[in-house]
Image: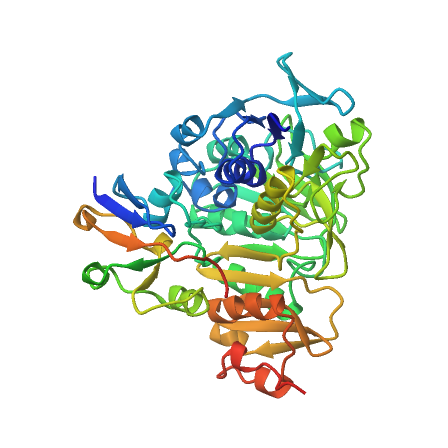
Length: 108
Length: 408
């Protein structure tokens, strides 16, 4: 079980032991991580599961695909290390992953 | 003093409302009445990855049970609210239990519209609204099964794509002259019809179903033109109706949904409603609307929760919708009624394009096909009531957000 840390908008660190095979978004939603809304359930259609990935981890993830790029471009305050957490599948290799949840979600 | 809030309905809206109520500090007794036996779950995957088996049942719930326990949310699973007495502030459940409330939130959702023709009661005819519906469908089909689908809307087409992906022989029978005719432009319908046909699905338009035949179970669908479509399983996706009986039987005004104001209040000051079951004013679009979408259920439920706690917040959002069919994604922002003109950005042949709807110079809706950038930009532009420069907008190489008109 990879251990994932979410830093919530209020600054709270939420540490979750998540099963492999689900997405980072699902791990967040099922555990009620504040600020991850994920309305579309992982269809890359809402831009409400945006996270900033810790730089050391960002380069170790599978790269963003075009739909994700397009969604992130108009999300709230995208950065170079932005990802949609629904597009990140959890694997054993991601043990220790740390992400920060933005202050807001959605089309901005 | 509000000491007990009862939320009826465990769909997207009900599940969100209890969440928001607790996050916003409501510390009293909080009950969520769910007529289905499962923990509140997401419906969008039902016609897609849950039907195909890619997503298992334990991945459907919004939250683990621990979340409800931790937040002292009393779940009444498999319980149906059968009567409401607004004077006594009481809801009766089918198990005989009576619950009294200080405030009540109705998140009753929508119910699949039923077929009424001869043979509509045959075994082998399915609707697709709940996990239980999909469990039955999955048991009824296997690779090679002949699946007939009545209705070429979101449910019909998503289900068609999934069944085809699972190896079934699929025929879609649509009443109108094109698929998704109520929600998208003709060129978008044409794009999806081509996608489906390229995958081997038979899409037949202008087909009025007159009866279903079979010896004890569905064998064929007969249409007004005399044609017969053989079927091992029949799935009906002909729209949904607001679920309102609990409210209307209690004397609350309903007209294509439970009538609420922008604060999600019904006529009764202690009763609120949110989600697919409501008919609500849209200040943004200047009329009353009833919207069936995850987004509206979520946003309206959040707003209703705040109003339940006497924080006056109006529900006024730009609706959005999506549909996944094979590897194409339809993304819609806004409502496309009452427009003056359509502008096509890009070419359907490129498999990534969008149709923008303008009222005067104002952008009111966008249908984006495999084009998340235009869609996300549109959600912001529509909310901002942006006025657009037509010439710039028609250039697909220019980002939509760069096509805003210069201030006059």
